[in-house]
Image (cartoon, rainbow, N blue to C red):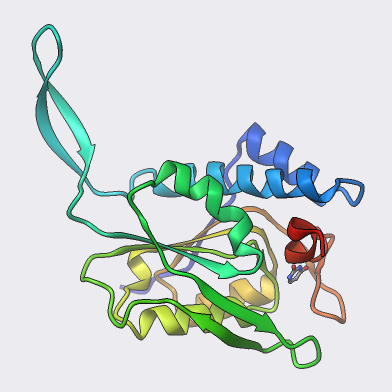
Length: 216
Ligand code: URA
């Protein structure tokens, strides 16, 4: 069966609202960081629907026994923020998934070649079978960082079909590369923009997400 990359843009007023705040060049850094945190929260909320494995059980309320559903504690959840900008999405994702393990991956973009190089890798040697993986990368632009991240994660045994990428703004070049190499992957993003400028920035985009989130 041939698969095709799935890209979801949830139609949600909170996602649209915080995206508008993040895009606005007049938004100060502290509010920009809040906007990305909120986008991390609501996009994660959407991304885990129908995806996190649950178990059916029964519990005792103060009045009687009743059927209940819990998140299956035996299925590991890994959240991978791509530094720096992915850190801004982490707070929102973590509040929804407090039991997830967080593995930091630091990738820096060479502004001339637009290639990503890895300066920090806290991924485990091997992911346990069945691990659900969420990658946090706000800007899917040329695809350099996300392709490097996917390579590092899949070579440690994670299955793209069990992964979700959370982004804020996605552009066609990155989506094309992901679709070509990881057709079973699923992306959740607040918007898909038209394209890139000559420096690899997404247009209209929101500028440099890391600089704006951390005020540098
Ligand atoms: N990274 C950013 O922070 N912004 C872009 O527009 C592209 C890559």
